[in-house]
Amino acid sequence: MTRWIGAIVAGLFLATLPYWRYLPLGGAVGAHMDHEPHHGGQLGMFGDHHIEVVRRRGRMEVFVSDAARRSLRPSAVSVRLDRHAEIRLEWRDHRFVAADESDATLIEVRVAVAEGAEFAGSFDFSTDNSG
Ligand SMILES: [Zn+2]
Image (tube, rainbow, N blue to C red; front, side, top):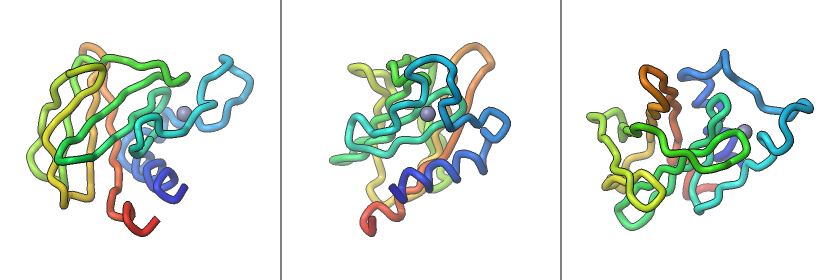
């Protein structure tokens, strides 16, 4: 739970405040009703999109979904690990993947959803072992 809150705060801080919607206020059925990680990673919400970042065995996987958690395939996904150079992920088997640096704690994700449209947010994995 603390990790989820951390992801929200970080995402807000970076870029998404004007698009923030958290509570389902009687709009589309199913939108923002599911905020559980589906792949054992960290989930963040950025506007009407969700990103799940999974790190395991030297690999990073990024899953992007819409408000109702239906999987999306963005045109591009890139990440920065601890503010190093941006890495472009490859689309493979319904997710974006890249090699991971196991000691990196700050994961900044940038998602291009259409020509000229993108959103970004960060994930803090520094508390991953402390709960
Ligand atoms: Zn949501």
